[in-house]
Length: 401
Image (tube, rainbow, N blue to C red; front, side, top):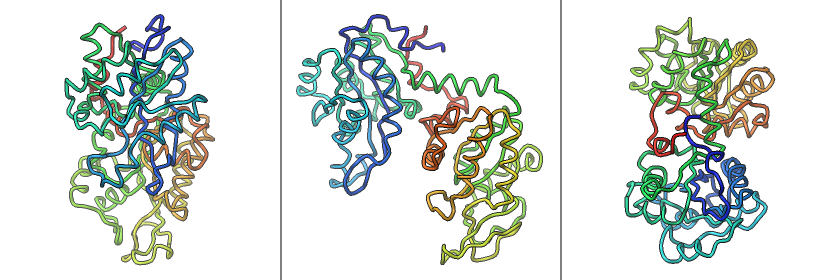
């Protein structure tokens, strides 16, 4: 790890540590309650280690998109219920600093902190300056802490967020140390290991909707993996590009254009589904498995049983498996068999298994296989971007060892 970690920070007793976490958790739309606390749990080891070292912790995160929310929706985007859940998981009270991100009330709350205390700032995006990398806002946030820790891998690619870039820059200007937390350090170590010296053979499973969103990621994987299995809605883009009738499954013209350069790999390095579970466009309860072409009036919703068997066998033959993107509409129980089956095959494979965050991580957890994976990333977009080789301004702000 070329960047400083918690182990490099020295004596933290009595220090106030400003930690950027990723508590952008799914909420119940009616009550605002936290529906899935996986991201909060991911930050606990770092927070606990800081507390054990005698520090006090000032945590900060964004939550949702308040700039696009209605006034009623915005009420549910305060950090109150997140703070409550954070405290329950941590086993000690966590208070929200104030109803504003920065200001006199926040400064007073931080000044009153004692070693072992934990507070959570209000939703960073309640202040529009957060997403503008505003220097004055960053200076105000930075003044609250003696040390900065980035433990928000899921937002490491957000280079315009002040809390990720301008805040640590302000701490540097003040001569204060900056490091990555345990979660970010692990994410970087795992991904760098995958890209530099993976155990072979290496298999990637790719799903999701759009080829265009993942073209750079797919190209990066093709340089590293031995084989790539395609599922999800993007499979129908590839199938249509190769002349297979996909029925009423919607495939945009721009997706066909995005997939075109990859078609030369189909049949060698890239494998496509040979059958699909499809549902009637006007009656999703009417389903049928199609081998080859899908009939008119039907839309593909999951990989078929023969494809699942073939893909599962390929997983079990591999030493390393990287998975990003569900292979079917897993949120619907009737269409979740493919995604569940891939997760099961990976969990039972004995291979190094890495799940690339986002919906894939949600699916693996939903089906109860998360604990059996080598690593489940906390960042969907960040995972994709880092594998693609993009440089993160947020990580550039962390002190080198």
